[in-house]
Length: 279
Ligand SMILES: [Zn+2]
Image (tube, rainbow, N blue to C red; front, top):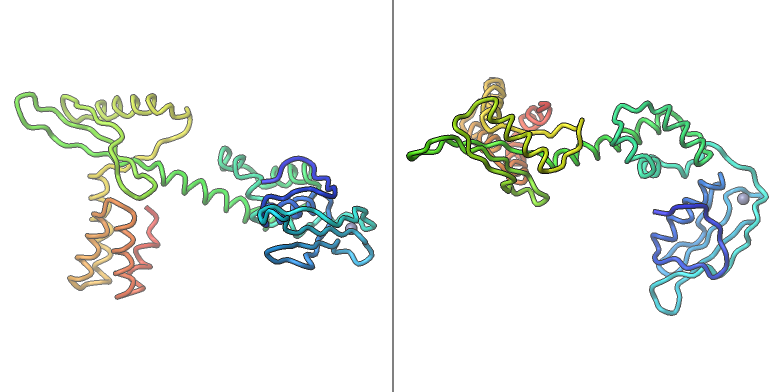
């Protein structure tokens, strides 16, 4: 990520090919110009201003250390006019600038993003590109949420004291479940769950006003059964039945996906039918 106003001077160092590309892209948006990359390989990049009348040009190539790039030719004068609907401001670029803002205000109006872009970067972006950028940020937010998905488990304890063991399993990056917290309560009630989850929320220092998402094993079973009732109307064989329940009972995403893939190989329609259900 490149921050601040970019001014080039001879001898400027770029730490990689990617760093160089990002810097020039950012510069093009900042200046309201379109850049043409006339040379681009492992060891050098040469840029020209996209406007025919303009003589701006920059060239950087590999330094003797074989790692960094250095700006070696620079003709830093533009004779062209600013373009406002800059194609360099791609969906990906807009998302990178406004991801945080959209994540903290998912219902933000794209017009606000439009105004901020005009103020901070002097670019005006058509509404379709803005919607696509916002959706991209929302998808990333959904992914973040999926990562902190918690599974609630409970089991009844046998022995002289009885009681119920409550636990929260969390899905970690490698799709394994690990226990986040456990507690023992006298019996399983709405109150005991609430007490347990509130303590957990405090312990995790989870921000107020943000909801933690939990999936309860019994609800999951019930939900799966109600889906299956409909699923079997269309896809009848016993083999589907086996695969369906293996997918539904799977406690990690990888295993779930493997089962879904198997269903998909035998019958793509059946997989699509299941994947279209909004959980
Ligand atoms: Zn120019």
